[in-house]
Image (tube, rainbow, N blue to C red; front, side, top):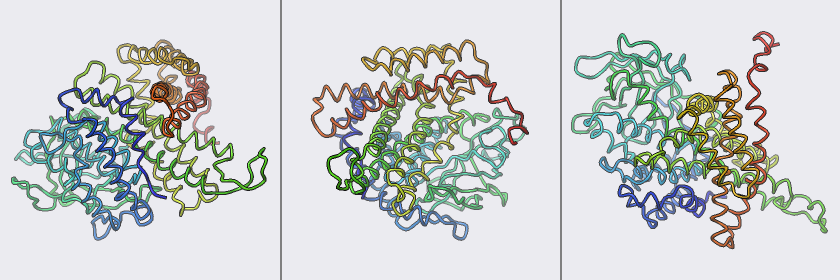
Amino acid sequence: MTYIAPVTEQLFVLRHITGIDELAAHARFADASPDMVEAITDGIGEFAAAEFYPLRRIGDTVGARLVDGQVVMPAGFVDAYKAYVANGWGSINAPADFGGQGLPFSLATVALDSLGAANMAFALCPILSVGAIEAINHHGSDAQKAMFLPRLSTGEWTGTMNLTEPQAGSDVGALKSTATPRGDGTYQIRGTKIFISFGDHDMAGNIVHLVLARTPDAPPGTKGISLFLVPKYRVNADGSLGARNDVKVVSIEHKMGINASPTCVLAFGEEGDCIGELIGPEFGGMRAMFTMMNNARLNVGLEGVQIAEAATQKAVAFARERVQSARAGGTSRDPVAIVDHPDVRRMLMRMKAGTQAIRALLYCASGFVDRAGLGIDGAQEMLELLTPLAKTYGTDMGSEIASLGIQVHGGMGFIEETGAAQLYRDIRIAAIYEGTNGIQAADLVGRKLGMRGGDAVREHLARIGREAGGHGALQALAGACTEVAEWMIGRASTDDRLAGSYAFTTMMAVATCGWLMARQLAAAQAAGGDTPFLKAKIASCRYYLDIMVPEALSLKGSAMAGADLLYALDDDELAA
């Protein structure tokens, strides 16, 4: 089989959930006309299927390789990336003042949806460049913007984020990399960074590393961190490339999945000649880092959608072709395609409904990115609330759906040649990087729950309850979420909140997805519901609302159980 972008589904969600027509009514996004939106959605789908999808297998089996200190991509990747740049796909929502098209972030989300479903590991490269563009555009000097943004926007150069060190993972404040002034406005960078995705490759002319480091006498912890721009090749005043900077690829990791994404260990300044520029003010690194990471977290949540779509397409195709056993209770004893067996149909419906639910959640969040950029009241608050839900539930559901895809394939799913296992191996990282899902849950109950004294969450849940219509389980879940939220705000200790944070995050995400699925159900029914797409949309929405939403009600007990049982054993007893 091949990958076919779900264009009709993407356009439906853009219109009914993202509100793309509403966004296009603003002067800034006036170019996002219905014809433009459809052309981009169609075009990127065709491109992804033709250029990215055929490289999925070789990307996994051969992967990126370190040869003589340089990362070499598998055959076909360089040409495919050049085609990506030549077609302008990387510039969709890049700043118009610096070579981008200035279109909505939500349209770039559609592009990444198709690219990543075709080849998740490959699509990581443009995701990282988006983070670099965001950081430089919001925090860089005019000179830095003029020099780097046009080339990053087109994809001629790519970007990376360099946060993690051997001793500093989620605890960013423990990093030890240093930046020493050289007396000419630049800095000497020294340190080692690990887990740097696309830290080196041979697809672009230059790589712009954004590196967190400490200046001399910086205060300890996160307050003393600054952000630096460190290009692989130094850039001359006219934009031409100069000498190689002192950035060395020490190694690339051998991983469970995303093997076409080179995960590098980078050494900065081993020869004492690594030159970087400060981005933003000294000690402003954490603020700049979160500019990079916030939208990146949505793009990681979108990886769950990508893999869910790919796994569902593969599982449906296999189930329609694989003939095995007569259908229980049927009148014939002839073997049937396994798609006719109830349990296989159960898995396929769960995959379809789950994929559509998380796509709605991610596309909804992308619309709030655009609205926040327009300065619309309440948009930034909704974006902040939705981000941990989208990242956590998007990647959790993506992993579940990939696992179900293997199950549908049966024993063949465990065999690498079918490709079902690769999808599961690729998505497993998404719950870990860009802030683990546990950290996202802690963010929800530690920061987002307290927005406006809890009113942001209260109002969101009240809206879900009001708009639940005749969907009793959704209304009940919104009520259960409200009860947990009030307990966490008013009575729970910090440990109790954190102990219940993951269950509460899932409840909130399912309630939000249920709300978005109910909106889609109403839109599909209003459109007549008489085409194959609309019939499938109605069935998927009903499955999510009737089957998957009620499941989340069972999490209320876990969310409110408190932390006592977690600490009933000391460390030695836990290891017994």
